[in-house]
Amino acid sequence: MPAYLLCSPPIYGHLSPVIDIGRGLMERGADITVLTGRKYEDLVARSGLSFAPLPAEVDYDDDDLDAWLPGRDKMRGLAAVRYGMIGMFARVIPGQWRAVESLLESGSFDAIIGEASFTGLAPYLARAPKDRLPVVGVSAVPVIMASVDAAPFGTALQPGTSGLARARNSALNAFLLRGPFRPVELAVKDAMAEVGVPPSGVSFFDFAYRSFDLLFQLSVESMEYPRRELPSTVRFVGPLRHGRPHASDRPDWWGDLDAGRPVVHVSQGTIDNVDLGRLIVPTLRALASEDVLVVATTGGRPIAELEAAMGGRLPNNARVAEFLPYDELLPLCDVFVTNGGFGGVQRALAAGVPLVVAGSTEEKPEVAARVQWAGCGINLRTGSPRPDRVRDAVRQVLHDTSYRAVSEVLRDEIRALPDPIDVISDALAHTH
Image (cartoon, rainbow, N blue to C red):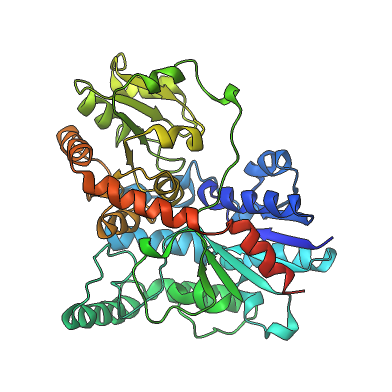
């Protein structure tokens, strides 16, 4: 029985696919240990996997990132991206690495699987392949690798195909690495020095793509900007597939989805959902008088919080739950209004659902930009849209069939791929 160590930061959107992969590998006969935050110990255990905790100094709460990153809510643009990268992915390297090192000393593993943003593997990956276990990555975020063919990650600019656009991309990459993002590189250098590892020479933005032995991108190639520099070790395998949920997962109003009206789903995901007034409330208000059924999920927030944010009763055409079985819900939807969480967008496209995206934190503006670039939805270019902008965008997506057509092409591309867990399992089998 092969044994694999799976590593993820304590962020649900990053950890969830890691657990799904771990469960799939376990079903294929592997012994799995998951290293992540203590908050998710029960989730790991309920999946039948062994749990290993991150040390307290790098174990932040993804429901309260403002406590880990004070002042985060007041930052926007590149400053917010830089602050988040340093706090969540650079200064955690020593603590994460020590946890990995301890597990490697006490356990017997055949390979390591790291979520691409688990930077604590950087000291280990600095070793020659012959001096370490095979290490493969899985990426649940857009590609952030610097390229002449794409604008720098964090700018949310369209890539462009002209010589002028490529010159702009090169200039912006050079400027940002030497200017606004230089503190990120310095923070990584300091973190590596703390554990006695010299800098690798690979930039923070290129780390996952140039360091892992293989990197499995949990998306399809058509939803990502082309990059001539992308190594052959990066493989687009599509979003993970999910089993059919039990009917008990469905609320008692589930039958309303078949009433004949267009179904619009709205969600703020599981991280940027502290203030439900940013997107869910404007969407409910925007569509209250439309001939649609609006289905909202709060990402675990009590429904009473949404009612309070609305300042009264929910609209008659609204249906709300904390969570819903996405693989049952999304095929019944006509539009998905989202703040741009990568996993949710991928699952919508796997169901052929066009999107309206309003995101301003983490990787969300970049996800929104890719949705616009691919033509499968509308980018509202804000995380707090006015109700009238949401209404206009939903109407446009419902009436312009091109968005649905592109989404269905992407759905078919996803369906044509083999099961991602089979691909990962086969790759691991050839590493030991």
